[in-house]
Length: 306
Length: 285
Figure 1 (cartoon, rainbow over the protein chains, first blue to last red):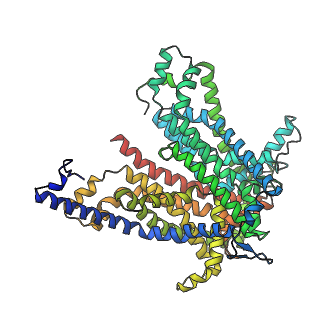
Figure 2 (figure 1 turned 135 degrees about the horizontal axis):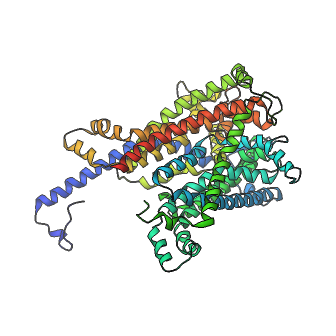
Figure 3 (figure 1 turned 180 degrees about the vertical axis):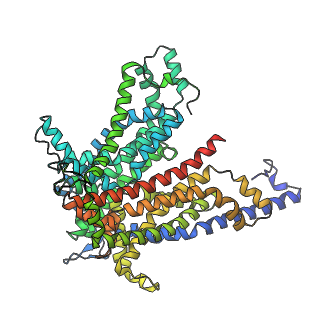
């Protein structure tokens, strides 16, 4: 607000026009707030019906009762589904999801950091071109990109043949956990590159120059200056790779066969074959919780600005 | 940007410089090699997929002769067009409401608007499945809506996640714009609608189109949510192909995949070009 009452003597304002202006401004502001709310209203209503309500139903399902016929009924709310989460079979899948997601995240970080560093040291024109080259796989069909690896890893695929030529075992990695990790890395690597680039590109290189002037080696300058400054990008990128990997379904379905299922596959199984809505929902709620915690970390790290 | 510091400070010297370049080239090869191999083998004149046996277009003509694929392409196109139109309108309105106004509850709306982007797609799929199975009867009230054939369910759920993607792209555009143009229009007695249509809309248009193209891509590419809500006989192409390729590698799957990937890449490139071209124009000024 442009009109500011001097502190202390606000109640005894003598200038009535100033009071009137304040009132008018206040009214105009409220009218504007109302307009903004009305403009957003259809979107709000849509998301309430088709996003928030469905979310509520899943949470409700996780406490609901499963009948003997496999139907889920919203009555007699209980914690049975959550008690099942400790079962060996679920814990096995959860641990596998966790270590695969962590490993995929670390590999992505190792692959992406030098690339992001390289891109941010190019001239603006080259930089833009390279960024587009990263973004095209980022947005294009995930399913088909994953399938492309199946073609390469097939029993007579190029990678399998190549590995056999090099004498590295029988070259069969399709339907193993290695294939799933490879698929996760391939699928989500661009999610790591982009925030890392955004963070590294922002580094004030005169600090590096200063470090070099003070006889820091190139490596020391990197470790003491660039790496700490780029850490928000590391956190943001790690979260963007970890969350979808943890709940992955498509990648293990195509590259892991049926043995290497992750939590996403387990949820699908509960809904589409086992017909156990409450357990499927409880696992979904847990995955959602992991996602929300990671997102909080992401915003803490300034991820929204990346 | 580079803050006027010699590039030599940023770029390592000697062997590590070439290591960095080699690594970057290798990662780009990693990005694109599988796609190239898939494309090449879709023209392979052999039932076995691994060995090159000469060039053929047979798999592409098979693809266009396959009725199931044809009908699922139509499902995809219908769902994509309708859901994109709705999500562009709702997403743009949401973006404007957040960027140009201050109102009560705005922060909560902002947070909810981000959720569909980061939520794992399996969770979103489960949400939609549970929601429609519980509320199917509610929708009978709406004339012309029939949840049985699945098309409406596909549209409703695609809109639910695409609103967020459209609004993110439009908001990025709005945040870079100068609001003073709109104020000037208001000073010249333009009403809100005129100011929007004549001043704001032309300026945010690249963002709106970029967001729309992104919505098209995401709608066409979505597998997980779609496979949970589509009805038998009304599956979109992505779901149909997912079913096919889980069974194994065949030349026909290769050719369908290449067509899908090409469509998806074309939309992505168009989206990037439109929203970035206008962005760099601003930087040059």
